[in-house]
Length: 561
Image (cartoon, rainbow, N blue to C red):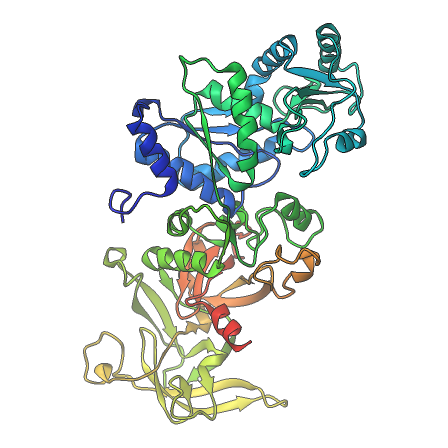
């Protein structure tokens, strides 16, 4: 459904109302403003799709602006990763900007604030300031330094900028209202001293602006019309507007902050702090571990940009926070890969099948469709021989009448090949089946047009020729957390919910055509699920990640509990 055919969401309605009120459409400009202190996650993906989606809908530019105001936590590595993620999702930004681009303008405005009696240097400790700020039900009290002279404030502020003071000795605060019911308006901090190397400005600055001071002013400098934030920034809107009031020139566009609710995803955490813990404490193998909720992790697992965009569009935006079941994201991935992923055969839990009446030494190459959803993908040749691997679960020695896979005395079709009948088994000393012996109907080859090939057989199973099989490392990923909302129980450490079975590494056997598969390529292992080639793959040692199963297995598990 196109944007024109569906109803407007409340953000679009705000924009439409602004256009009707006189805002020129050619003035519309949006931005996506991540802080480069970690990798982007699925929540950011929704925000990216929202902002850049609005840009596409209204043919308006969208800036990518890095909120790089805390050099102690920000790195160029994260900048590069964020840019890669946005591009991978399929979006292009109009301009690449940084809050650090505006450090001089912000500083100059701060000087004017001091001169106009709108800001002052405070020398209290953080503990003293916390007490002085009051509570949500009690007004704060003025800082003993609130009435410093303009001259002293300018001198101290310049000293802060020049690095004359240690961190924490002085801060610059806006002078607003210590009795405001909104605690964010009680003389908020504008600048603090940080002695750290900045990834762009080096050691040029020893003071760094706070988010609330830098963000709205950056929007103003870039002439952003609609500054879209998550709901926790709703109390910040009053401060956003107050800062703009002090500098606003009526000849320019005035940015408007509006908020939307986070859409949390079940069985995940999206807090950068918690994601960082998972990485640094070794619970996962990096920011791009396929179990992570990061965009880079989803990419490595095999999720597609189209699936993530469709997921973001499906859940939409709302004014109230809620928990979205991860199965919806998996459905979107499955739906997209069903259209695009080539079909191949792979056996992940093999048992040997010998077709006793098939000539020894014979091999033939059988035709198989690449993707029945897309005829243009054509077909491929798959080798067939006397000895095959099949899935262990596709054979049952003693089966009831409702079992339609291979069993003794009954027929089943081998995918793209022949009809076979189970005849006998070979077992080891422990009673485990090591070989299955079967016979085949030589006239039943799929697609041959013979009467035997047209016989209706209820069961079809996949297979791989042992002689031609390509061994591969298969990484089976499951949800990282067993609890649907690991952040929900504040009394319990979220790490207590880590799924100990979130990764299983096995050896699988694939049809040989996959030996040249490239990192990032997607395949459907028929009857098993969707898999993606991992970057760890090397010549002769392919590695595949399980992206998602053919159906939601968690729904079955949860229904039994």
